[in-house]
Amino acid sequence: MAAKPLFVSEINTQVKSLLETTFVQVCVRGEISALTHHSSGHIYFTIKDEKSALDCMMFKGSASKGLKFRLEVGMDIVIYGAISVYVPRGSYKLNCFSIEPFGVGALSIAFEQLKSDLEKEGYFDRESKKEIPKYIDHIVLVTSSSGAALQDMLRVAQKRWPLIKITTINTLVQGEGAKESISKNIAIADSLGADLIVVARGGGSLEDLWAFNERVVAEAIYRAKTPIVSAIGHEVDMMISDFVADIRAPTPSAAMEMVLPDKSEVLIVLSEYIDRIDSALQRTLRQKEHQLKSLHESVNRYSIDARLERSKREIDELAKKYGSFFEIRLHSLGRGTRELFEKMDMIFLSNLNQKKSKISSLKESLESYNPKRRIKKGFAQVVKNQKVANLKEIKVGEEFLLEDIDMRILAKAMQKSKI
Image (cartoon, rainbow, N blue to C red; front, side):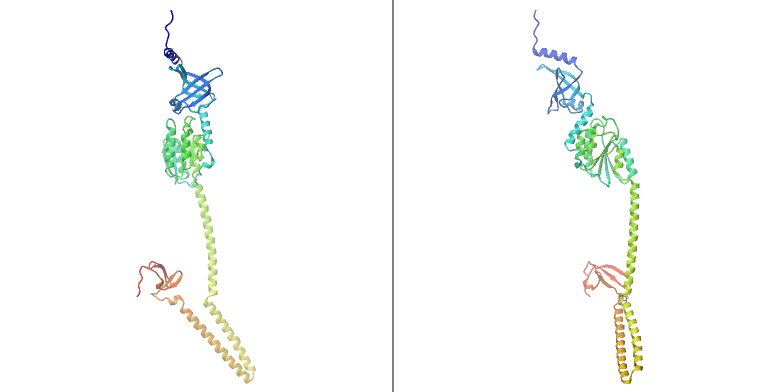
C-alpha cells in the first residue's frame, strides 16, 4: 500500500523541526566568502572548506554583542550558533551568535583593523597633533571618580604644582556603555576652556581597557580643540586612544609628571633669575653713580661762578704783571717818554677798572636770575613741559608743576578766570 504523500511545506517543516532540535548549539570552522553587510545591520556570508560551503547569517543584535572585529573575505573563523531552516524555500542557514578568528584573538584582530583604518584616515598624522601648553593653569580629568588612577593623579599634582586647577568629570571607563560615556565626557571637557584634558584609567586586562579602542572614542579625541593626553593602563598597554591623542603617557600618574612643572625646580630657577637681576641692577647703579659724579664735576668746572673766578684771577695776574712793568719802565725813561707811559698806564688801569666793574655788574645780574633768589616766600614758579610758563598757558584740566626753593608739587588746573 503506497504511503500518503506529504506537501512540500510539511516536509520542510519536519526538516526544520529535526535540524533545529538536533543542531541547537554548534561550533563550525570555515573560510569566509560572499560577504554582505546589509544596511539593516544584519550580516550575510558563506563559509567554506575544501569540499563544501554553508550559508550563514548574523543578526544586528548578535553582531553588536558577539562580534569584536570586522569580518573580511578570506578570513578563517570559528562560529558559535545554531542551524535555522527557512520553510518557504526549504533552505537552511547557520544562525551565528558569536564569531572568533581562528588561532588569533578577536580583540587583537579588531585592534589592528581599527588602527589600520584610522591611520589611513589621518587620525595619527603629526600635523593634526596639538601642542601641549608650557604653562598650564587648568586641567580636566576624564576618568572614574572612584578609581585609584584619580587619587594617584591628584597626589602627584599636589606635590608638583599645588596652584593647578583640576576639574574631574566622573566617567564610566569599563563595561557596557563605557565608550559612550568616555566620548560624551571628552566633548564636555572640551567645552570648559581648560588648558589640557587627561583621559585616564588604571591597569586591567585587554577586555577591561577595550573601551579606549573604540572608534567613537577615537573620533571624540580627534575632534577636540583642547590638547589631550591619553594615560591608559600601564606602560606596556597600547590603546587606540594613545595613537589619536596629542601625547601618550605610560600611566595616569606619569601624565601629571609630564605636563606639570616641579615647584622645587621652578623655585631654583626663580632664585637664579633674582640673583641675575640683582647683579645687573647693582652694575647699573654703579655706572649711573659714576656718570652722575662726572656730570657734577663738569657742572662745577663750567659753571658761571667758576668762569668768573678764573677771569678774575687772570685779571689780577695781568694787573700785577703789567703794573710792575710800567713802574720799572718809568724810572728808566726820560721825562717826555715817561709822561707818555704814565698816560698809557692810566688808560690801561682805567680800562681794567671798567672791565672789573662790568664783571661785577654781570655777576650781580646773574645772581638776580638765580631761582633761589627770585622765588620769595609765598611764591612759586609754574613749570609746564619742563619749561617755566605763565598761568595763561595753563588750560583747565591740565597738569603742571609748582616749584619753590625746596619743594615741587604736581598740580591740576580745576578752574581758570581773570583777576
